[in-house]
Image (cartoon, rainbow, N blue to C red):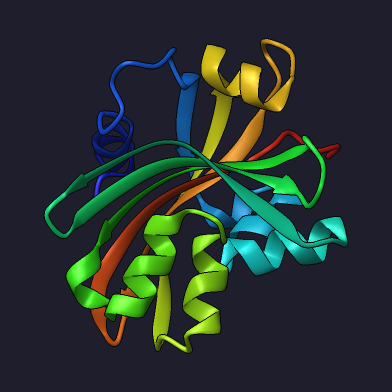
Length: 179
């Protein structure tokens, strides 16, 4: 996988928004600074990792979504539960034929973060970290994160395998944090 091609593929799913990034660089996982390294360089769900880091549960806000047969895409924010504080931006491309009808319904309802849905339904899953990205936010991320132009944050591209089948492609970007 070429990370920048995969990033472009995911961001093109929602072409009508403001530019997501001003600059992106694929970096080796080992060069990811803390606390981003602990947040991104692992094979766990970001929902659980963000909850642990921020010390609270997270809520999902679906910004945009598309459903074409069994292919479902959505652009989301994760927020500290009960607040408007954004901790993560994400784009998800799911192949719903790999999950049960109950999991499909809960995902499409958009009320619970994807990772939590998969965990709650005990879907056998493996997360394959594809790439770490060093990101200079563009207008859309600046708006969501309420950060300044020129700030740096980090994200990751990953694939979730459900029952050993590649079912979900992800872009997950952490809100800027003190390094």
